[in-house]
Length: 570
Ligand code: ATP
Ligand code: MG
Picture 1 (cartoon, helix red, strand yellow):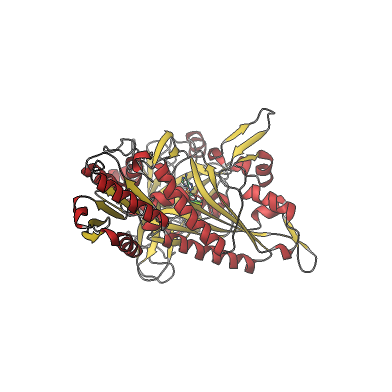
Picture 2: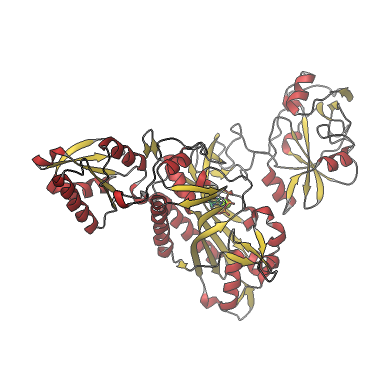
């Protein structure tokens, strides 16, 4: 590519719309431009990086037995109604009608469409295993699109779906996909970790997320410092020991105390002169239209994913003010387990079990109870592991301390089982001629997010330092003075030589000051720069390695060979 004829609008200033480094650099390096909230144009440079990631994905998916196809992005509502997700998917599903008043959505994922295709054509166990994948644009009407390609509304995803006749078959494909994912993220040069994960709205029973370790990641992962255990905190189980209670000795008198305007745990604790762990926090949720009351020790955080899974709820949200008032007779902030009105399910986290003489809301405005004790004042609720794991918790596998790291979810693999095939009647005839539902898996990678995550991990004060396999260009030939015919034609010849070797080369033949050209090359992070300048009269050019900044003179005649050597080490 000749820079002078290319479309590469770099920016000197950091755009105000960007908060994190990858987003800033993608804008500055002219890779993407925002069209509207969560919608980005991929500029030629950005598209090059995306295509490189796609090609790595394609190679590894094909090697693992995947077969590529391409499904429509627009999907009919009927299919989503068959699985019940038309109602359940929420506002992220962008629904609309066509001119005939028929309902459609933009595909956020393709389980329904692929299952529909497969049920029409797959007949027998002999047709399996089958693994189909596509690389395609998805749309999710995200509530808070941010960080550029990291969380956009329109984004490119590789999604694969597997079909087999039994759990062993599913397990084999799952392992093959898992390994392919490791290869993909390794080839993209990422510091990543597979972690145990919740299955979310996709469903199923086993799943792993592939997390790129980065401080700006939106996910938290619990990593063991002793063994290889790692899980999304949404899922990581907490040890179920009784939490030792600070208060010992006899049971105090149960008392009502006035706590005017004190609603938050910290405020109540401070007002009463106790620590937050002396409080039982009472949270009220609506799970699939029924209210539930959940208790947890005041200093701990409720894990909504665990709660949702225990309730086997499809939809879970904090109760609105009106529901809280009708259950407690009090405004939000004064709920407690004693005297909740009506027949509601009461759940507690294990952390409340060992508590004595504790404090809770009194279900009356501006009032709390102190000196509460289980059995004497109220029965223990049904107990579950409902809290978010903390660094104080031991590893659930080996007991060593855990640490909480931040991660960017770049890939996700799920064992779906028969969730979709049963609802949609996707069956096959087994060896005995019996009709059985197909066992499915699904496997996603965010392509744009992978590029952004790589930039998040690989940058310095000058710009991006992308790993070679996903860098838009591998080599830039910078002609210092394009008005100098000798330099210009030497640059041209070198450019042709690199092209003929299949190297992705950018020829910076712009009539600009060398400083400007160097800065742009550094911003884009092209692994090698060959500078064709005044030393050419001695038969020399300069070779600069972006990652180390190291520069050395090499002979013009050897530059292709030297560059190939340096590239293979990059
Ligand atoms: P998240 O929890 O980040 O919202 P998800 O769990 O809903 O993601 P999946 O349904 O597992 O996402 O989708 C597969 C992959 O698609 C994710 O691992 C991620 O890399 C990518 N992805 C999902 N949502 C987005 C988005 N809004 N923008 C960019 N990539 C996304
Ligand atoms: Mg996911």
